[in-house]
Image (tube, rainbow, N blue to C red):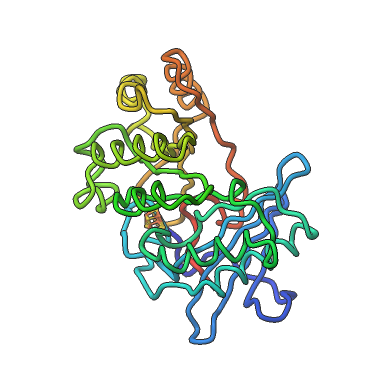
Length: 290
Ligand code: SF4
């Protein structure tokens, strides 16, 4: 969670954007938007081996209340319009010097709780006379909104799906991500399986590694068993600590051990190197702090 002592934005931001910060470590650029009514949202442009990706927000704040997420601690302000989402795309594209390789709806908010506007933005971005950006290079990330996953699966859109599993322990998940009470893990996994079948895409599962909480080899074994038979890739994300957080990130050795168990079980697993954490732009750190 981010506190009022969070990042100070510099004053050189272009018109229409309330603030801009660039990581001195890896060049990650975080933009703060203040829309007409003052609703804030952030987007992030990340660079990796000559490629750039944009992480866009779908809502100002978020109602899902995940305990480990700075956006969740903000609460919900409102849905973003399709125009506000595409405005973020344009700004990130400028940051990337005109070229973006991929887009993820993984910033502030839960995309499936604002699906009409997110879908409209996807169509505008991919439309030939719009931004002509391929749907196959876009990923929608969800905490596990089952009707949203089903709708995407049936939509014919070519965008990819990422589902944040958070933990492999069904009992523990509801405590970390309250949405689990409405959409329990087995239902989320069943919807993901159906998405793979209908879309003929694989699904990305995101798993945040918290020290001592969900990062044991036993948890890894449990995770491998959960995703068995699903055409998936797992992204392991060492938790990004924010100032007031009650959680700690897993150490590198422990994260690698976790990955090894999954790979040993035949699951394609990637250990993500987080970017932008020095400017609170990494996963779960977006809090629109001034
Ligand atoms: S992790 Fe995603 S769904 Fe959960 S509170 Fe944060 S933005 Fe919302």
